[in-house]
Length: 388
Image 1 (cartoon, rainbow, N blue to C red):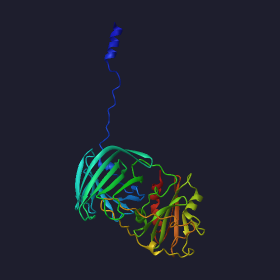
Image 2: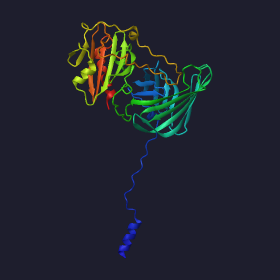
Image 3: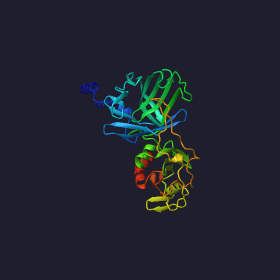
Image 4: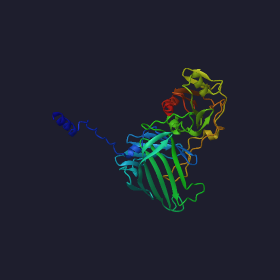
């Protein structure tokens, strides 16, 4: 009888361990969808094979992020606050709520920019996306419709419709822009989609380093070089040549060029020299600094008027709110050949190379456009652009 009573007690008792409390993830905020660290950058590609690179060039002490692309004529500024993400003027005045709170299905907000009235809504939540083979979850679709008045910029009143997909810690990964009715301006598309192909964003899921490393994944911008060497340098473009990406910048005194190549293993000194020099027989060495050509032995070869022009942003015909046009890439024919002497006049040309994992990066420049001490300021950035 006692045994039966004991069994009955066991049956009535819940002797299992208490269940662990369920910890819910904090609600998504606009700040999660809009990363904004100095140096963050996004490489986008359109359905017409155009490319666009957007960079956070600075974050001010007031928390304003300055966004600029090589193909834009002016910067855009955003501030993240408890009220969401706000588009602001250079003086900090709020122009519009770009991403509003709360981030919840069907939440809607509206704003005006001059004569243009816009309405936006969180159309879907919990979406997924993929960038460079990396799966992103918890993404949110924003649908935005702006009514452009007659004559600004199109002859007829036009609706500008955006469908945007934003992913936590990454930012916008896709945007489709439609105009209704279709613009009558020749060459201006009625619809265009931009897709994020690669990024370098702090705290975002790390992307695999592609092999080979091409210019679509080596995300150097004109603002990077200008910050180190001065605003007069102009980005000519980038091209994949002889297995490496070569990005070229010009100024009135010559050329600065950056080369990046992924090797099968960490490159040794011989491989780095080949990447840096590429057939320059007269190159000498002075310690760490590799001198490509000295002023007393380099043949005069002044930069062309086109290359010597100061930095002039490329105008864009896209109306406010739409994605700007791409910068013009250089073709392999325009890229420097291995035996080319870089234009330098009487100035010497210097360079250095560095290793980051299996990637070698080389920089060579004329002293007149970027002295060696200033060029060295780019080393941390160059490492970050190829770090896994």
